[in-house]
View 1 (cartoon, rainbow, N blue to C red):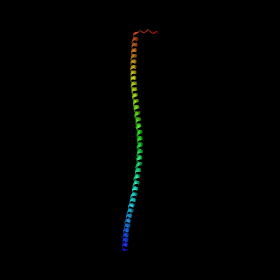
View 2 (tube, rainbow, N blue to C red):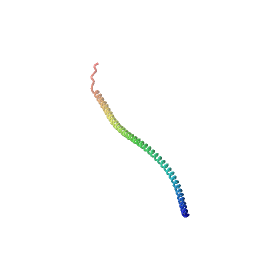
View 3 (cartoon, one colour):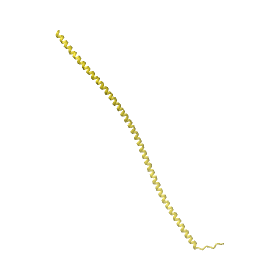
View 4 (tube, one colour):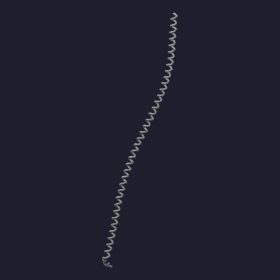
Length: 145
């Protein structure tokens, strides 16, 4: 009976040791669980911050894209205005060339007319001189007074 009692006491010690070991293991597991929970919470906070930064960066990119689109639109409008200005300048240059050509033509016509007037005046003076010379050779009839 004493042997049986010693065996039971030894079994009780073994079970007590196992219970103590399980208690320590449970405490360690709780610590790891709390640490993991804290790490998980820290990770969730970090992920939330990263998501907020990504959202902010995405909104900033969207605003930048909109500004780029507006600037491109303004650039297209300026380019169209430049092309219209170039076309207007080309038209003005063409009209100026046509006006210069007409001026030269009219100037040449004016010079031709001046020469014709000068020739006509010269011919008239010669005709008057010839008339005067003939009149000097023709005797005049006496005047009836």
